[in-house]
Amino acid sequence: MAVCTEKTVWSFMFLLTGAVGQNVIYPLTSTCAVRGSTVTLPCTFTPRKSFSDGQREVPLKIVRVRWCKNHEICQGGTPSVFDSNSTNRDPRYQYLGDMKTNCTLQIRDVQQGDSATFRFRMEADNSKGHFTNMTGVTVRVDDGLKMRIISSSDDKKLSRGETVTLLCASVCTFHQLEVTWFKDGHALSDNGPSLHLSPLTAENSGNYTCALKNINETLSEPYSLQVEAEERQPADGNLPLIVGVVSGVLLAVIAFILFIFIIRRKLAAAEHQRAEGGETEPKDPDNIYSSIQEESHRQETSRAAEDVSYASVQFKHSHERSRHVEEVDNAVVYSSLASRG
Ligand SMILES: *[C@@H]1O[C@H](CO)[C@@H](O)[C@H](O)[C@H]1NC(C)=O
Ligand SMILES: *[C@@H]1O[C@H](CO)[C@@H](O)[C@H](O)[C@H]1NC(C)=O
Ligand SMILES: *[C@@H]1O[C@H](CO)[C@@H](O)[C@H](O)[C@H]1NC(C)=O
Ligand SMILES: *[C@@H]1O[C@H](CO)[C@@H](O)[C@H](O)[C@H]1NC(C)=O
Ligand SMILES: *[C@@H]1O[C@H](CO)[C@@H](O)[C@H](O)[C@H]1NC(C)=O
Image (cartoon, rainbow, N blue to C red; front, side):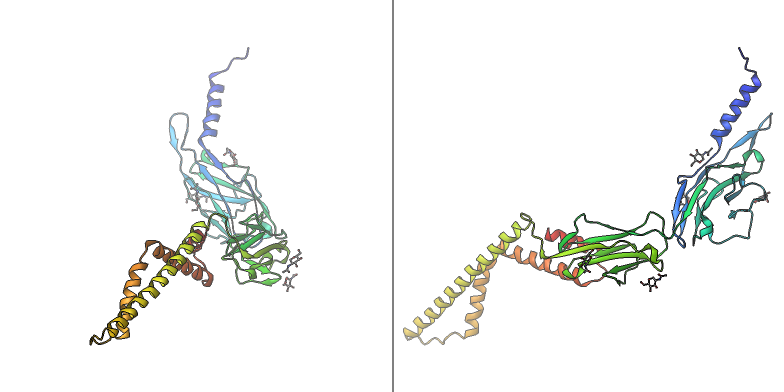
């Protein structure tokens, strides 16, 4: 049987603690980006705290961090895209990390030459604390990929007044790049990745495409949107509204009948007085009218009628507003929908 010497056990332990003591984690080991965009390579690291020189534990401190392109170790005089020791830096490579735990790198205005594997290296005040994780982050630069339109609604046929958001998407990062939207081949003024259409009208029907600005190859397949002329009437959703309108109309009819009835009574009374030969002067028409109004108003102050008219005024107001305001506040859209549904 092999005999394990104290020394081999000790060095095995050392290897274990060394591996456990320090690491670099790339949460994303491969990514793809469109030329000109900004891509972020997330990264975290744990430095080794100390090492043993045989007699005592010597504390370690990170004094240098760097990122290299396509180099396995990134040590010594290897050219780097970022080096905390160098003042001559390419502003396209921004180190968003620190000297303790965060080693995130951001690449702006991505170029074809950034199709590479990027690796992070930390260097301590003693070479025992130097470490590179050779896995790295592989970046692929692509700008010939077609964009894709994703709709917030599964339905391609939508009704007037509904809301839909179209998203111009790509498998690659295109952060910081503008999007151009087209409707039936004509460019729209929107240049963000999402196109919010609300409330829909028949004019929104058409074939939509999107592309990254000035990169024709990215033009998406058309997305055909059809807005039906009919406003969708949810079967039971509008029932309370219908009941409200009907009872409102009924109340108005009753009020009108009462109105006529009262006028006739007042006129008859005046006629009667005159016929009796009373010398009281005839009431002037304004007075008659205002007293009639008062009375009919009293009849009309039914709670139901007030609620209905208030609700319909509120509804019209928010509807009109969301129709006219170009940049519709989401909350308003939601409330107008909510009052409708
Ligand atoms: C190297 O990076 C990979 C990817 O993030 C990770 O799975 C692995 O644990 C890392 N290794 C070390 C020793 O840090
Ligand atoms: C990098 O800078 C640190 C101090 O910031 C220094 O201790 C170290 O020697 C430098 N390393 C090199 C290789 O210049
Ligand atoms: C690292 O720093 C970047 C930029 O400040 C930040 O976005 C990211 O959340 C940080 N990562 C961690 C793990 O703290
Ligand atoms: C949209 O495209 C379809 C074919 O994909 C075509 O039949 C239709 O006429 C187009 N609509 C408009 C408004 O151009
Ligand atoms: C890109 O498309 C625009 C408008 O559709 C056109 O004027 C231009 O010539 C195209 N460029 C290329 C390189 O195809």
